[in-house]
Image 1 (spheres, rainbow, N blue to C red):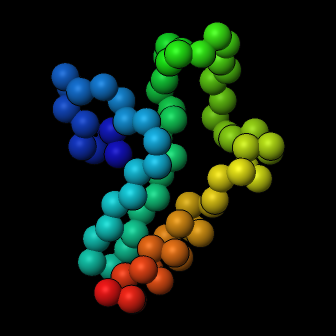
Image 2 (cartoon, one colour):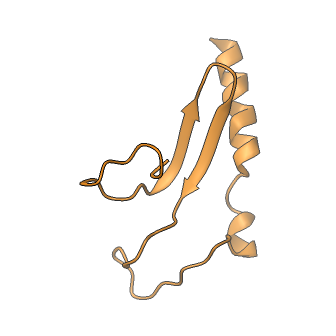
Length: 74
């Protein structure tokens, strides 16, 4: 998302970003490029989610699936 849309004066995106086109839904966990802690005492930067966090967060594909179900109800 930040690579395509973010303006130079804007801060990096944080959270779950959901974008939809006519034919496809995109889901991105936007936690990369965070270079400073945000109200935490310690932090670690990683390229992938730790296994214990994967169990707590849905896979992007699951979010897309649920969004499609929601769209079909409208």
